[in-house]
Image (cartoon, rainbow, N blue to C red; front, side, top):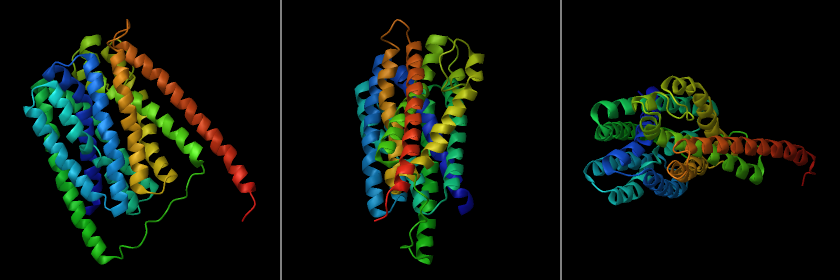
Length: 354
């Protein structure tokens, strides 16, 4: 069972995010009557809460070298979140629930990868596990929008609740397996360290800033496309799930065709990014939390980007034009970080030994 436990856990946590992220804007719009501007600000406030949780929880986990109990708590909070959202009836109360419960509930996936890093998983194993999450991101949005299209927005809350129960169950099994391993082995044995990347503080700052911008574009499209497709393109919301995350085009078939480009972009941000951050920063919780926070900060930025859709003459298409510009800036920053790393390495090798 242990052989399939981590992949199953990764799939379930990925589905939880893939169900909630593209559905939340539509839930706010249809169930609570939120305007485009209100959706943007609610998502921004919600992601600020997630940002704070992604700093506090990994710090606690690093101090206690315990990443599974916070993961279990995240699953329980997700279950509480959907239960409360099912009964709350006003937008201000929904915002409070998202801040108090939803933010901390979102750190579960980062704790999974921090646990793997702490347990000595190789970079290739991290990438493989991250690929499973990517599979969930591919399958989740179409499933979510199909559920919403067939049964209504409240039905997705039930689906997220079922996934949360699965996350709780797999995490409890991982805790039991981890305790058994600690009783059999020496718990003081450190996890094997990977070779650190010679980026330096400036390089780390540049890479982090670039990923914030790239994550902002991805988070915006994930959160907003379910609203954009029916309201601006004028087609059924199911197409949003099939083609989620692509730029503004005017028909369903172009949406699907451009999904290949979106998948390529997401693979670079999600698959390579996590391993890169874990190699830049040795502490499992801090490195994984910082990477996840690039998405959180990017998601905060996505709020004003969504607001653009209701504040300019271009309408909702303005949001996607802004995303294209931010993607270009992020790529330029990564290029600058690469040049800094290249110039720094010869200088360090030439420095006299002390």
